[in-house]
Each structure stands twice: as structure tokens, then as C-alpha cells.
Picture 1 (cartoon, rainbow, N blue to C red):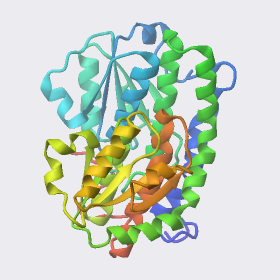
Picture 2 (cartoon, protein in one colour; picture 1 turned 45 degrees about the vertical axis):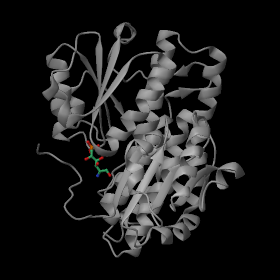
Picture 3 (cartoon, rainbow, N blue to C red; picture 1 turned 90 degrees about the horizontal axis):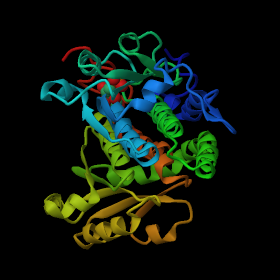
Length: 368
Ligand code: AGP
């Protein structure tokens, strides 16, 4: 096992470090500078994809968070309505499905029984099913009409890191592919996005290298009873993923909220010393998020903000800053999630947790 860790103290740190490679491998051969996105391996014929009038995403845990990002990207670029649901609920609510619905199942393992059943339910009700998955020939890959494989390599740590980033990349490709098929993206804008997508492995590598700065901030979270993760728009699913990582690795109660929702209840929990982690890189609604941060700070919260490099205005609203390289807003989850993974890792390690095998959890959940 030590040999497999390749000199890293644990699988999690190794897998965090492998993220630029996982991302580059997932993009390679699918993103072309001139023609754009080519997803030939998706076996669903293009005429059928063109006919799709609704997308239903089903997934669990980190894969579900990737699905929430996919919703924003597909709706914005491909102008297709998207619903996202935790897979364990989907088939029990009698969802409206037909042959023009595309069910997208997301699962790193390809074996989560909830996602498998949800995809099966979609197909049984006439929908086409596409699966985004990291394991070749997994149960989900065999169940679906088409598969878009992520190429993150095997992930050993129970907490998903590199597979999550690879899922985000595959879903961004899917969103842009659908946009191309539907003719909803101006060629000039598409070209800018392809360029930004190709630059992501390098930006993720920069984010990974900043681990030591994150380790210093981790001290702020040590001993915290509750931690709030706030985000808006595309930052909200990133906040959810950050909170999940802290819960599962460090066993700290962490809740994510869309920051505008705070005043509808959760702000009652904010008191001097409450730690708030804000995904505050430049995205739509950034100004409004700043107002939300002012509200929690006025009540004594200590704010750790993720900010785009050089963005001093965000830094003014925070007690501590985690700097991240900027990218297109809808690609930002791929970069912004990295310091949140590192933050949870550092808090867990300092609290003496087994980061690779957190208590009560299995890597793959094959029971309902
Ligand atoms: C992520 O850190 C978790 N271990 C968990 O939420 C996971 O994402 C979920 O169980 C889904 O697994 P899957 O992607 O293999 O379907």
C-alpha cells in the first residue's frame, strides 16, 4: 500500500495532486481547437440528442454536486431545461419522462445502486440515458444508452476528489456539445470557451500547488463546532461540495447555503466565532454575495473567502483569503473546489482522522 501511495502520506493527497492530469486526460481527444467538442463515443445518435427537450440529472453525493454545475452550464449554453435530483429520490416521485428526455446519470464508480435504479427508471419510461462514469464497463455503463467516461484513473480514498473534477470536465464538454448541436452558442463565444477549457489543467495545477497556504487557514477551522459554506450561482454547488468534504473527512458539522437564503432562517445560528467559508470568486451575483458576507461579519462571524487572484475588494470582506486563479465563471468549480478539498484534508489530518477511510462510509454504496 505504501508503494501505491507513491511517496504521499495518504491516497487523498496523492489524488488531489493528480487532478490536473485527470482533467487533461478527460479533455484529450474531445476538445478540438477548430471543430470544438467531439464526443463520438456517446453512442446516442446526434439527431436524437438534437430532439431532446429536457435533461434529468441523477446522482449522489459529490456526483450530485457535479450535476448541479451541469444544470447551470447546460441551461445557459444549450438553452435546455435541466432538473437535478439525488438519485435515491428520483424514481419515487413519479417524474415526468418521455422519449425526448435525456437522463444523465453521474457516478464515479458506476455502481451506486440509487443511481443505477434511477437511470433504469428513466429508460423504463421511454427516456434515453447517458452516463458519466469513471469505471469502464461498470453496471451503469452497461445500463445506459451512451457513456461519457471520465479518465481520472482509480480513486482509492473514500472521499471523491480527482473523479469529481473529471466529472465536472466531462459535464462541461457535454453542455458545450449540446450547445453546438442546438446552435445556441455564437462561434466566437464558443471559441473563447474552448480556449478557457483547454487552460483548466494548468489552472488546477496552480491551485493544487497552493496547498501550504490552505494549511495555514485550516487552523481557523480547528475546534469550530459548526461551519457554514456560502456561495451563490455556480459557487453554491462548490460550497455544497466543500461542506460535504469537511463533514465526511473531519466530522465537523458543515452546512452549505445559497447566501441569499441566510436571512430566511440560518443567520439565526451565526454568532461571534462562527466560521463562514465563502466561495467568492468573481461570478454572477458577486456583489450580492459581498452584502451577505457583510451581514454575517456584523454578527461576529469569521469569514474565510475564496477570491480570484488580485481581487482585493473580496479580500476586504474576509478575515482570511484563499486565492485561486480566475477562469470563466461556469468553469470556476473545477478550480475553486481544490482549496476546499485541501481545507477539509488539513482539518481532518490535524484532528487525527483517517483521511482515506472515514468512519461509517464506503467508497461505493451498493445498497439502498
Ligand atoms: C464523495 O466524497 C462521497 N464519498 C460520496 O458522496 C460519493 O460521491 C457518492 O457516494 C456517489 O458515488 P458515485 O459517484 O460512485 O456514484
